[in-house]
Image (cartoon, rainbow, N blue to C red; front, side, top):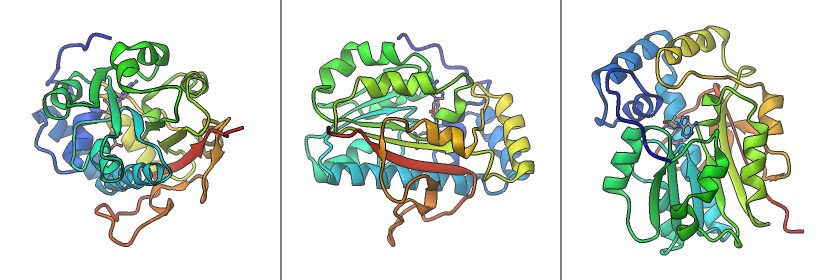
Length: 261
Ligand SMILES: C[S@@+](CC[C@H](N)C(=O)[O-])C[C@H]1O[C@@H](n2cnc3c(N)ncnc32)[C@H](O)[C@@H]1O
């Protein structure tokens, strides 16, 4: 997929999120959207940080379980430590393909992260087949072995039915693969926050679509959920020395494993 041109006049989810994590790779429109969001939804920074903490913990969990290749869709702007850095603490040759819709992310990630065994491509979660068929994906990842599929902080930007999208990705994975996901949840998020958040993101390139706990749970169909199941992001196997120890009620998270028989 060819990346579209960078539009710095319109805020993007990737840059708002990176701003919340402390990145300066943002435009004025992103910082303004982030300020509006924070004024109406003061815990948004905690949501972003808690989400990132979950991502890093699950990469470590998957790597400790033997996973040495990852497909990270909706990867966001690079923020150290990134997925390949965490995975390579356990598997020094771990392979990672980063995928994002946002041309800022793709340009920045290609400039700073691409190296042997790590690639970044422009891709859209709503078109999983094109991601799976991408030559960089095929050259970097071995689909005959288990892969860690990651869609953290991205599925709530998909307006359409997400079930067939996840099913398409799941069906391409070998038994023993993992699926890590977080999702903004309408059941756990305070109503005023949901309204404020949706209104701000509506003005960006990435409007938000909240799902219920039941709808989020359904996205793990075909996977066996790891303990503790689908929980608030901060409650998924917390660790004492987390660099992102924040708590937030807005997002649910889970990790599933494809049965090996
Ligand atoms: C909140 S950031 C999450 C970044 C990272 N996964 C993390 O959790 O730290 C969401 C990312 O998803 C990307 N995104 C939104 N819709 C997408 C889509 N349909 N396909 C691929 N990426 C998408 C955005 O550009 C943004 O970079």
